[in-house]
Image 1 (cartoon, rainbow, N blue to C red):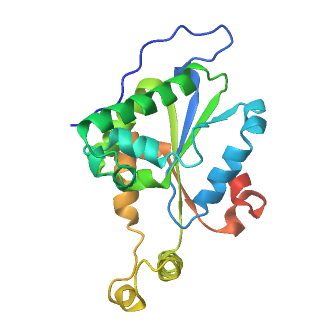
Image 2 (image 1 turned 90 degrees about the vertical axis):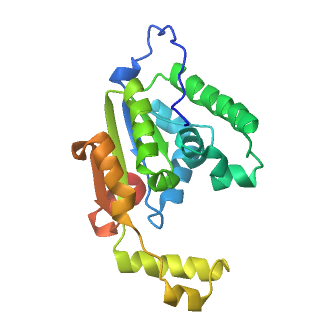
Length: 219
């Protein structure tokens, strides 16, 4: 069974806020809700955000592969790892050691009041995997906010179908037989249980409800 990584204790620098006093925002998507745009904006504006007390993990734009690999029960079956040839216990161990060092370094060097992780792939973790993720984050932060944008189901299905046809993933006949569904209960319910409903912010993917009608500003 894959478990959350354990990090050695670090001596806190004088001006570094305690991780327990640092707020963590965990953005889990959903797909088709401008997640990539949010991630790109945060990643490319990281220096500006640091000056405003917001620390976005700089390892990559999309943090899905970091957390999905570390907290899946069977990371060797994770499609990103399979494509990369990380499919044996030895390779997984080396990969996780690398990812653990990335997170450890990010946390130990943090000087901000807010840390942001973003990855829509985390929404498809199995419930036990999400529990492991929650246990790990709770060991680092006392204030965790899960953010998730949801799209009207028909609009989600329509957008997903167009993307699948354009990418030659599925045929129109296959989509008509089995239209893509958002599966919001599966994607969100486990986070409500793992973090508590009071710590999960479910937002409608509707520009009229966003700050300045802009999803980046709304986030």
